[in-house]
Image (cartoon, rainbow, N blue to C red):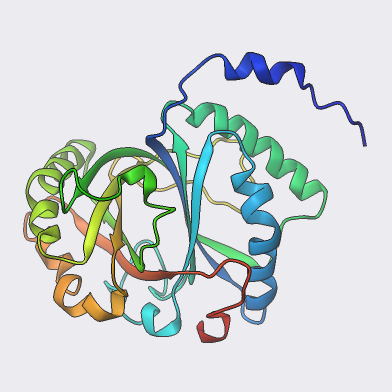
Length: 279
């Protein structure tokens, strides 16, 4: 293997372009390991892919893995979901922040490195991508205003749980109205007095044409919103009070249909904790 890493280009690249800390973009990926491959998949992702296939890449500056044990999977709704069929599918979720303005730069690298990882047999095949998309940040709503961690801290702060919510509008125009309603009315009301410290809202963007073939093209790039609710307590402890009615509250407005509300808890890096509770 050549030792040429073109190091002379690194200083040149670092001197240009955005380099803020705000999460302008995200990679949100929900994956289902095939039955019988749960332990092997977890070890591959923890020991290799989380780093080589994500955190080692330029402009991807924060990441966190989450898991849905069987009891958490059974809390999901709606039963008929356009995201996951059946709705319990997808027991691992990974979330990553990408520096604002660096999505295109990051994508050039990620396509290249994933081709290399495939060539070197460092991609685990016995898994299904249920919901994988790069996304653009649209807004963040905080429960406590200026107090507490910001959205760029969210993947490093020790939150006790995460809820993934996916909402589809009928059109791009309706999605704009939905986003405004979420930002100004719905989310501030839902967060007040709740265990949710903040909610980040994203919209998906298309994957490049030269993406890996096992990752399907993103749906709903003109109509979908993805919400991440960061919880200060285990989602099982607050589900009925704060999340059981999420679908009805959104759909009563006529602005969109909730296609998934799914709770997760953080994995414990370097361990197989929770793997025996997935089925």
